[in-house]
Length: 178
Image 1 (cartoon, one colour):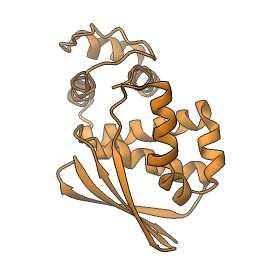
Image 2 (cartoon, rainbow, N blue to C red):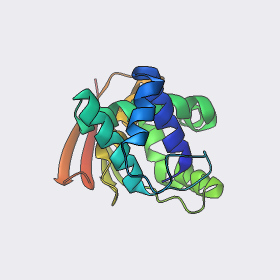
Image 3 (tube, rainbow, N blue to C red):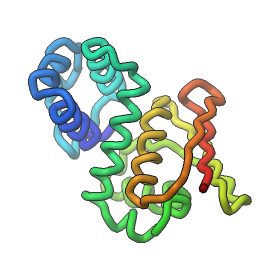
């Protein structure tokens, strides 16, 4: 998992809770990296799982809710850091459909060793976009937050329904306009 994700998680925890909370979860987790992350580094996904789990333990907020909130945060940050991806699409459906063939291609240019989720799409209904998320990391709640963050960015009236197909590793999302 790329270091930028860990850096953004640190920012979220410090902003929503406190810098002391972030220090506590780092100190109380068994992290091979020691909790020292750089934006361009690559770290084990298990470290993020530990950090989110420890934050959940300390705050009594379910892991799924924390991942969702983190996804919303990441969408806002990515819109700020990489505005071209959002501007080129112009709306949520086109943005989502650009993930595999445009956005992830560009991400891989910057981070060739990134292990990205895969999305398949059904856009046969102009008012409903069906996405199937597949990732060995099983962070569908994070993806859900990212989608809802993109919806907020574009200011569209779209609801998201999340349907687990294989736990959190294979999930169907239905985005419905209206």
